[in-house]
Amino acid sequence: MVLDSISSLQFTVHVMGNEFTEFGKFSLSHASRLDDLFAQWLSLPDTQRLVMSLLEEAKLVNSSTGQTSPSVSASLLPGVFKEGCTPPLSPRNSPLSPKSPMRRSGSGPSNLGSPLRKSSDLLREVIPQFYFPDGPPASREMASQCLARIDQIFAGHPDGLPASAFMTITKEICKLPSFFSSILFRNLDVNGTGLVTRERFIEYWVDQNMLTADTATRIFTVLKQPDKNYLTQEDFRPILRELLATHRGLEFLHDTPEFQERYAETVIYRIFFYVNKAGNGQLQLREIKRSNLIASLQQVDEEEDINKVLRYFSYEHFYVIYCKFWELDSDHDFLIDKDDLLRYGNHALTYRIVERIFSQIPRKFSSKVEGKMGYEDFVWFILSEEDKSSEPSLEYWFKCVDLDCDGVITPNEMQFFYEEQLHRMECMAQEPVLFEDIVCQMADMICPDKEGQLTLRDLKQCKLSGNFFNILFNLNKFVAFETRDPFLIRQEREDPSLTEWDRFAHTEYIRLSMEEDGEDASNSSAEVWDESFEAPF
Image 1: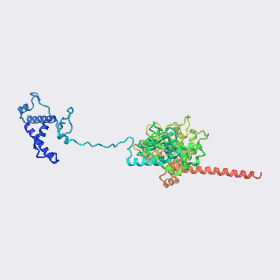
Image 2: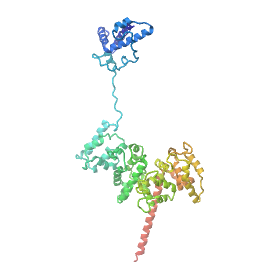
Image 3: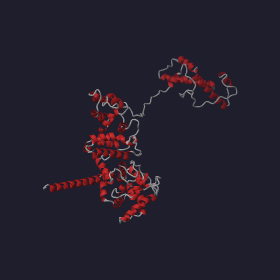
Image 4: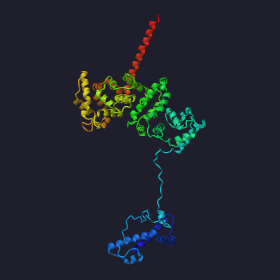
């Protein structure tokens, strides 16, 4: 049996030799050379181990069939196995098998090498890098075109570009809004020389793979502090100062720096209200990418009419917010208390909801005065009150109504707030709506996953969730919803893309401007009357 195995090995080698003939490595006329190679192959340590493994398998087969050949085993393998001992079984997928390219650990490479092993070695293919933590590098064509354009811009400024000539770099090379020019220049001019050299710009922008970065990453990198991985409110002030100084739609504010500062603050508060989902004052890159902030920054850079940029930058929206706050701030100390807030919207809110707001449940006040709401806190309130369809607004009011803070609004909590609404309707001689009817109406409107328990997820899935809160604590909007005000319905149908806040701000701006025009007209008429009265004397 062993001799048959060896003969089969020799036959296999000859067959392999015939296969090599097809590739032109061997020839049938070189039989003697083939025998020499076979002898050399038999002398290799790997080959001997292979032969021994085959012998073990052959002996196993003999033992299973009842045939033994002790003479052959003893003659071929003297002193290898102890007498009376059975050799261990060889695994089917042995690392010594020529089918496997792996070698047994501890066996060093052969001195002469095996031609069969060399011919069976697989070529290793190098996998190109596909993940770049800092962004993929720019292609050679892109980099060469960019460097050529940089050379053209810096050609006339061998010592470096001043801030006045840096707008081209900001717009063409960095693809940033024009009002980012000043902060980008300051980031590059770390030594305060007033000049930015070509080498410094390439080091900051090109070498950091900013050419291939998306717009959100570029803006985030330019705005953030070097040691931070988030943006704060202070990081937006430099670009807003530049915007106020350069935008044509804000030129009328140059003579009123106090309103410039209030406008910048309002824009920042609105950005963090909508974009900073975590509400921690630390704006992350992923939050910016998921928002419409980048599109708004680009729009305000291209649009001359600032009021057409409804997201964040509209001056009319700022005017409405500021005037509303000023109307409530009776003593003009730039702080409002509970009594002031109760007058909002012609006393539309209930005492209980105002109490929850001043308990700072939905949001901690930025004001340091106890029992007082600052301007930033009022911005969050009015944005939440006038547009209850947005996610930040739903979260704001959900925290107010969820008395036990367990993440679920129950009928008992709804009844706590609706009791005051019911009492107010009775005082105003309106037909009261029973709470039982209200519960059924709200359940049909929101369709919660679990009956009797409203979650924030249920409210976010419903387009009419804002009416749920109006029913509980805003009497004016509740009555408008019950009567289905045709004016509001027509407004919604005219432009569905506008949000509730957009429609409210537009209406209020018209009202406030008309009131201001009326006051100016009355003042001018009084002056004319005084002049005509005093003229004869």
